[in-house]
Length: 486
Image 1 (cartoon, rainbow, N blue to C red):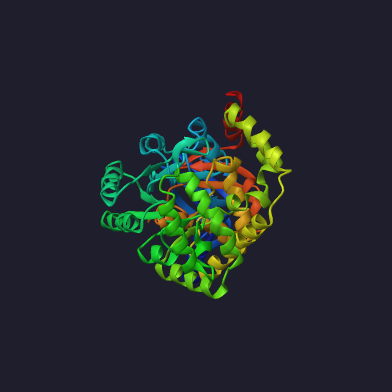
Image 2 (image 1 turned 45 degrees about the vertical axis):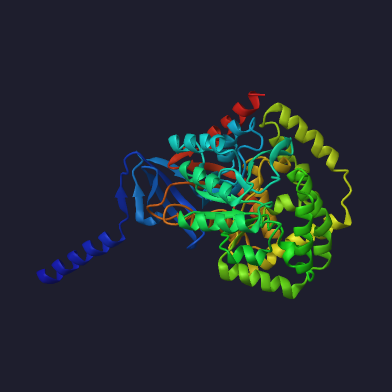
């Protein structure tokens, strides 16, 4: 009888021990309780407790298995959703230098915890990268390309407000070598090739990048076609720029015409010459779009792993009219007053701007092509080109997510384009882009489910940058500070 009692007692202890939640005190930790995790790798997990410690995700467990001490810093996650911090994979700190000092706060307020600067004077952009590195909990992570590596004449030469000095004009292959070596010494994270490069210059950039372990993004040079550029090792394309020229039934004829125009326009400014070529060829290319040719081009991009950053909100600027929305009009109060006034005045005027038949066709082509790129399985990253086209830093990323969904991505796939995909691009998938133990705690808490409506990414409850929690009060204070600066 005693043996039976002892056995039952022991059994009771084992049952109670296995069912009893673990009571833990995490010193100097932030604990988010009972939240729904939306992880771009593992999917949705409900009723999770997430512990953040020393800037990283320390522990993830079901709420019933982790009983937290009330002495922890607790965040009530009930009814809320946790996503990784967002990336804007195409920004320009140097496009409007007066705006640059406000971009960090604007990014963080909108849950953008990492950015990829794709062109600007290297010392100017590096200043912001270094500042972010020195203050990792108060600024988004900055990855930079340095200036656009362009041929001569170069497009962004500082000749007017629409063409600030974002590029360097390279007259020869030797000039390419000299400038790439300089950028490597400045510790750039990637290189960006641009439209006026000769084929020989472009190929040299690719060779130097490969030798130094750097990726190359950019616009396919007008002297080349997309297939040649991708086969040379181009890692990614911005805006799908000049893709339409290679998807036309008369693409070979257009390429020969471009080469002749480049020679004839050698004395023009870069911006004027590029505009002339685009005007002469884009409408023709769209009108002669060839499905079979496009599928062949996309197959090459897929085989070569040439990623796409469509900047779809920018490309469909005239039909999308993001700037008419109340959220954008309000956001112009947080940029420097002279810029905000101009954006409001100009954007209001543009509401009456008639959309040409070509612009309608071009916008339709962009949506169709993003859908085809996605269907083909070519990786996509979400980028905006902010602050071009009245695209407010931070807010514009949420617009990009919405138009990517409109183009055919699911909300989950759009989130991947702004989280895990950029992390993969920079070989940081073990550090960022997902919600897993050991990763940096760059996170966003949302008040509504973004998988039901992607625009719910704008309903931000809190932002966490490398373990530092910015609650709604702190986020509002950042905006108030920006507004009072005007």
